Amino acid sequence: MNQKIGKLYGIGVGPGDPELITLKSARILNTVDVIFAAASTKNNYSLAVNIAKPHIPDKTPLRMLAFPMTKDEEETQTAWKDHALTILKELEQGNDAAFLTLGDPMTYSTYAYVLRHIQALAPDLPVETIPGITSYQAAAACLNTPLVEGEESFLLVSGVKGGDRLRDVSGKPENVVFLKAYKNAGDINAALEETGLFKNCVGVMNCGRSNQEIINDISKFNTKTPDYWTLIIAKQKK
Ligand SMILES: C[S@@+](CC[C@H](N)C(=O)[O-])C[C@H]1O[C@@H](n2cnc3c(N)ncnc32)[C@H](O)[C@@H]1O
Image (cartoon, rainbow, N blue to C red; front, side, top):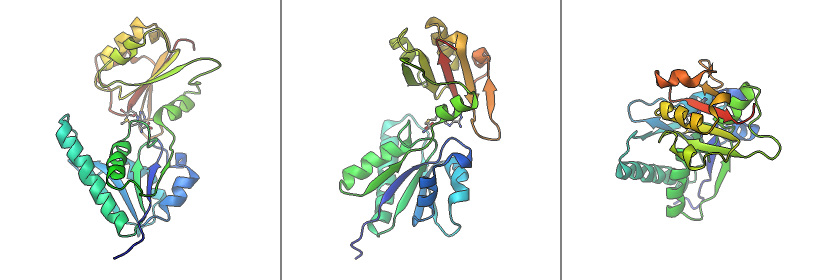
């Protein structure tokens, strides 16, 4: 039996532009024995693989892990645990493995959940997480708009439950970013109005990809649900 245990790398591939992957991630992708990425249960497609493709040698095996899009907590936990076991099996054979994530691996990412399961199963496993450029950093850069300046604060929230997370801290943050701004965009807009942030907000869809769109008037999200890959940057001051 092979005694060497492989190392797990959590790799952030950035938001879409293959040039926004770090040199470190590109180097590691060239050396690992196997690459894992999350895919939907409906198909094998992974945007993260597509972005990282120029940095992945042809010979490196790619293994897609199907994650169910479900609200069922038990089903989700089972999928994370099963995938943690699959990755661990590969590492126990002495193979180094990378797990790809879009943007940054520690920002609203499946990697963090799978990593928790892996570390529970193998607490001494060598793990290195390589940060990636987040979607909202790329969006601020493409708008040539600072995210925060001077003594300002910054709030990053999920829009899955609409605008309530913003209402909770109403009036406090000077700058807010909503990720996952797709489902409840109408309520997010209402919360931005209520907190005085609606006057300076921009939607960015598919940042850094060929279908990138900048939406200066996000009131149109009230009538047309935006794409999943949508974020909103809102500021008290321009
Ligand atoms: C599960 S979170 C993943 C965040 C990612 N780990 C990051 O660092 O940006 C998914 C949400 O991120 C945002 N997102 C990710 N990539 C994006 C892109 N290229 N353009 C716009 N929004 C993006 C969207 O709001 C999407 O609903």
